Image 1 (cartoon, rainbow, N blue to C red):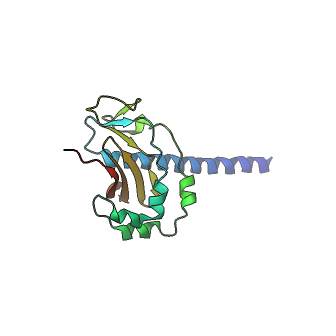
Image 2 (cartoon, rainbow, N blue to C red):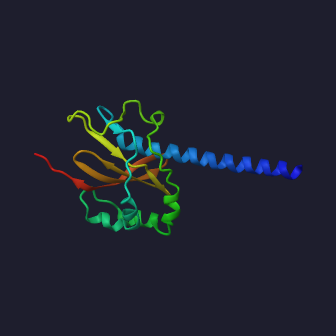
Image 3 (cartoon, one colour):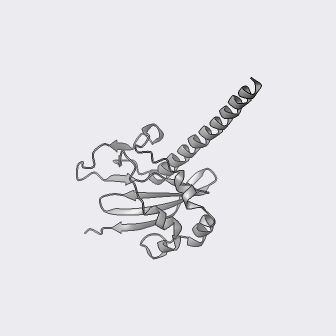
Length: 173
């Protein structure tokens, strides 16, 4: 009887710790999303589902590739140092592959849309599920005229963009 009681207590403890870790990770992912769109939520339309970007593994495994891409200069040595000795298969197994964005965790001004086609004047943004590795966050963004990768670093309790590179950019007159 004592054996079963101990097993139940141990299982409850591990389940609680695991659940809290998952909740904290979820909060951090939405903190990244909020950081990216802070001050830009007027007329911002996000597609309601996370965009799947399989190319992220390439950029994470080869951060030096970002050097030759269009966008703000990045401290690639800092990024590479943070990613050194990371087991990417372990990190990617942590991705929840959650399909829909959680509206309760977004800023109220952000509008989620269900359709990929709305008014041509509205800019629809598609985002990937943020990936968090150590103190870095990675997210893919896509809109009508651009696709980009943003790398954020957690400084104190805030996420700050340290790198923003374009994988596609359409220049329009």
